[in-house]
Image (tube, rainbow, N blue to C red; front, side, top):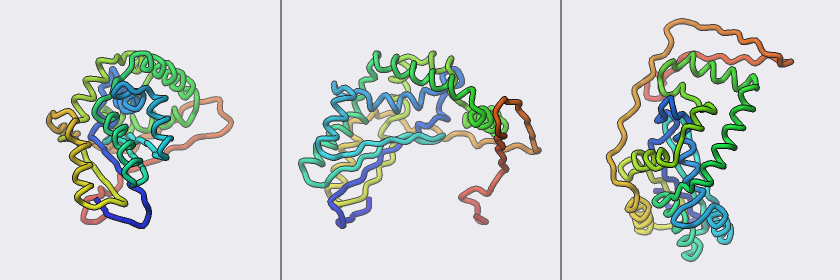
Length: 240
């Protein structure tokens, strides 16, 4: 928590070890769909109501997902009325996602159509090939495919949420126009209703390639796409 009263604004972020590397090959894409679906219905509110109620108070809801983590961000005015309504919606998304079946089927159709279109593009082809060459069988190499997305069911979302969005698996960060006592109240409110499962185990470290690997992929594009990479220094290395 960082206290700052320069502007009447509060920024919150809650993230979990629930990134795409937590997928399994047969259902790659589950982590991303779970995080997205949490914002499409919660505590009986549909996605239109969530969006309208946020807009009514000038609050902004955002999200993020990478290999390691998934989470949600909130920016709200710090006055009690706006803050409390924004926190009510934000807390509902974190603690009471509905995962509506009709929305899941719509989103799967949209995602599959996007994947099929992307699969024809040289940047997608080259990036997927690069990640597979770099990480091999490590979960960092997993990528969504139409068949893995189609295999995902609502029960999978519920199970992934219960296993990865627990209080023991959460990191809460706050900055803005509030004092520490209020920040502690907000943190308790955000975490109290989360699943109470154990923290997930760390991922195994990826084994980097020991030898150079060059691949050339034919494609009818008018330009070449070149992807290059090599092992770098770890952030925690004394030489960093």
